[in-house]
Amino acid sequence: MTTATTATPTTAITNIAALVTNDPSLGDGPLGLIRDAAVVIDGDRVAWVGGTSKAPATDNRVDAGGRAAIPGFVDSHSHLVFAGDRTEEFNARMSGRPYSAGGIRTTVAATRAASNNVLHANVGRYVAEARRQGTTTVEIKSGYGLTSQDEARALTIAGAHTDEVTFLGAHIVAPEFADDPAGYVDLVTGPMLDACAPHARWIDVFCEQGAFDGDQARAILTAGKERGLTPRVHANQLSHGPGVRLAVELGAASADHCTHLTDADVDALAQGETVATLLPGAEFSTRSVYPDARRLLDAGVTVALSPDCNPGSSFTSSMPFCIALAVRDMGMTPDEAVWAATAGGARALRRTDVGRVSPGARADLALLDAPSHVHLAYRPGVPLVSAVWQHGTLV
Ligand code: NIG
Ligand code: FE
Image (tube, rainbow, N blue to C red; front, side, top):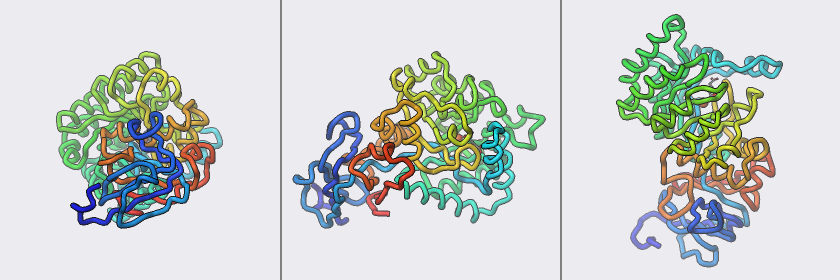
């Protein structure tokens, strides 16, 4: 313990029935599960993890009352900078109309027309909503501006809420360029990238029929890499296509969706460094077939889960909901799904400081109103997250 050398008060959370650390050296199995555990927080970091009976003396003590605790969820994929919603589109879908990328245009119009204050308030609202459900790290994309100015504005607003900001100027071809998609790619790889690169860590492309093809996606991601951005790709969501293999080839941090995969796609993911981020909220909300997580896991692919919160294809911020879907409909065990929603998300964001509860990690934890993390899938739809620490603070 380092209490003597630090000014911040230390806090021990004790009497945790089952603690998921995601550090196999600390406990059982891949989740590093510790029973009757305690966690000591010093400032914004985890200082100590172990059995309650061995917990060192601290300034404060919080009795978890036999609840389970997990690392705060790491949501590596969201589209929170938007205005308006698409209730009517959802209603029509539930009457049989299929989802298409074209609906994005509705949100682009509403977002362009919204003030900075409205967009800030919306992002804050959904970040807080996600936090109440245990999410302590969130990536946020642009993609509903589609002009240099509107995309840079979206990234600046996102950056006020997170360090994980993604430039998605290539969400769809902007309406003004409907007859000149090549001109739009020139804009995205030229002036728009100039305006946006300073405000982002990542670059993303929606590689799909009705959005950008493989050649366009390659040009955009390559231009982003040259400006210091790391790729992530919306890949193989609605149909088979080149997105996943392109993501692996370009060293993308993640290929997101991965719903329609060939054996070659799975092999590429298994051999590369790219995480497969599965977004079952999108399949739920578009009434489509879920991605086959079991196939990916059995092939040795690293899998992450995210709600993909956006007003079109998946208007949920709830990671517990995604865990339940992944377990029920995608062949994941509860342990695999909880890992994917925490450590998997951290891998997808190339972060080592989050997604685990072990010494040196950021003190981000969710306490569950349940004796085990398995209840996240076993008790779907029940708000089980009873307390959240973020950066060492009870929020
Ligand atoms: O991840 N696929 C592209 N982007 C979002 C949907 C955006 C929208 O429909 O507004 C997604 O599903
Ligand atoms: Fe998305």
